[in-house]
Length: 252
Ligand SMILES: O=C[C@H](O)COP(=O)(O)O
Image (cartoon, rainbow, N blue to C red; front, top):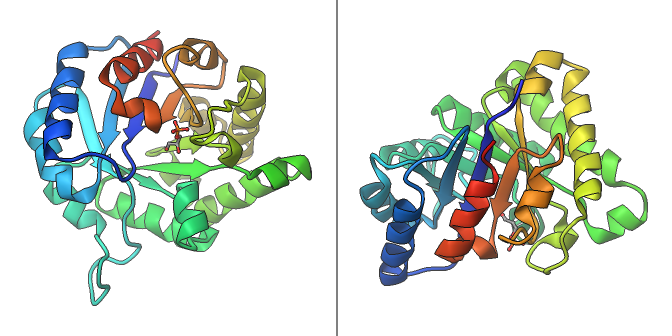
């Protein structure tokens, strides 16, 4: 079977009302439809209402970049999965390496966030990936296995079915240094095999996307690999023409 492609933009902490309006309008105009692929933008919380208002009824979905693992409560500054659904979100990124590194999110917390997202019918985009030091120490597979197993251990493999997995080698994020298609493919195949050990059907169906310096000029080559189903795009998702072209590269 051919899995559908998927591309999500992660705007990180960039944008303002005026720039967003221009970017979203250009994306909507540039992506009237996609063949066997879908796309989304994950915007900062304050702009969810803006994304909803511009993207509703279009081919571009939207989502958040993080959620609390808690349902509600005295957690100053946090945002729950339910709050994202109030703004029509379909997706939420969990476990991005910037959250893991800068905000101390460990595998258990990421698994809880994944669970919390699914409880509200959001599709979690689960990020996994190794640092440069871990790659150089030949620990890539162990690191990713731990990140994946923590989630499967908490929610079970059947729940994984309703998610997207994003392999993002930390050393390739925002650095301009992309993993080669073969390096990325090797890890994607590892992730798929690890899931296949639990359930081969789910492993065959799940979308595994790559993130780390994906641009319009390298997307096709990456997405052509058998286990790479699309991308999670940082910097290039802030440039309409780049993002649109990456989304088209995920078509099949
Ligand atoms: O979530 C997106 C990744 O962090 C990739 O960012 P980048 O495309 O700017 O390297």
